[in-house]
Length: 168
Image (cartoon, rainbow, N blue to C red):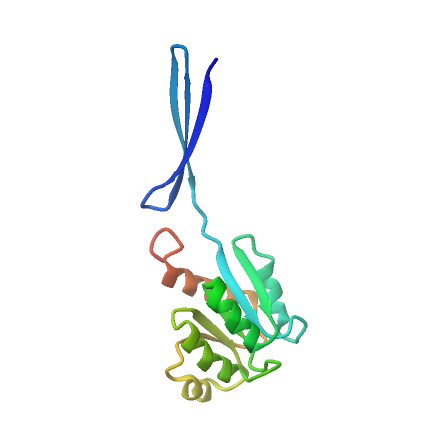
């Protein structure tokens, strides 16, 4: 009788390797199967689940490569950021317990390495002035279309190196 032994390893290139060894009487076979590892993007939507801009959250929530979660208050989001370590936080400009700007300032203190996109209707020059030094990845318009949302993902993947070709 032969026994089957399976092992899982990760290579430095991020490739998942499954190794199966069949050992028995005089039979030895060693096969390696490689599957490209897909890193899930962890997204945290900070704002009401049902709001005029919640279509942005819905768009990301329905993507297979994204694990999207919602926090309706800034306090809950800050708690989640410290535990979950999301790759991207998308902040609505008005939250239940604080403004989006107040949240962004507190988020920097909680985890300054989290990428943050901000939904705002402010003109670009005013937004830049108001958020200078907050490390905002991108300003999102409340009426964003899918092309702009894909651009956000492209920017994040370049930063995170998730594309497998260093964002190129």
